[in-house]
Image (tube, rainbow, N blue to C red; front, side, top):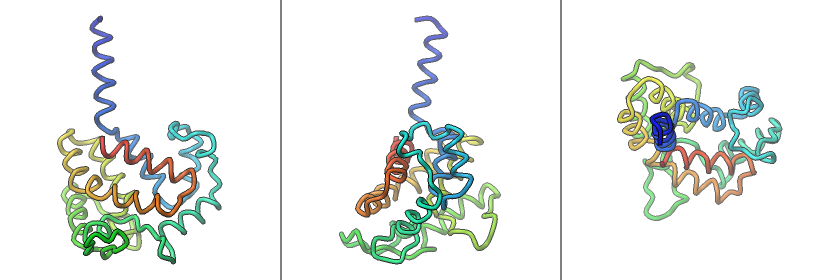
Length: 190
């Protein structure tokens, strides 16, 4: 093996272990309410992991799906907020969720404040929305060392991604969200 080959293998190994800023940022766009930004992201090829049926982005259909899954009303709602999955009294009941703006929300907000970051708009989603946490992880991946990224993922996204995505799967998401679930788990839990 030449030195160039060894370097390429080392780079590929590092790439598979640690999520990149671009991958995390792309996932964040996928978890936001469907918009032209999402359509542009899909059309740019940034989501090459989507197959043809998953990448067929009809914004109106995706907005309906987003509302059904994340906004409600109804018992099948899957709130995309960390505090809901970490701050409730779960007693083995997966359907019992915690409050929005619970202690987990405050903990993630402290991370943002430590880096001098604020939400753009006080009317925006709580700071523990999955997309916001992924955006912050992307920021860390671009600006900080691997240990910092791993610490944030361990303290936040990895602590609630499984119950959140399990609840989503129970509510039969369409092909786009099924693919986003799988890619998010792959990236966040590796």
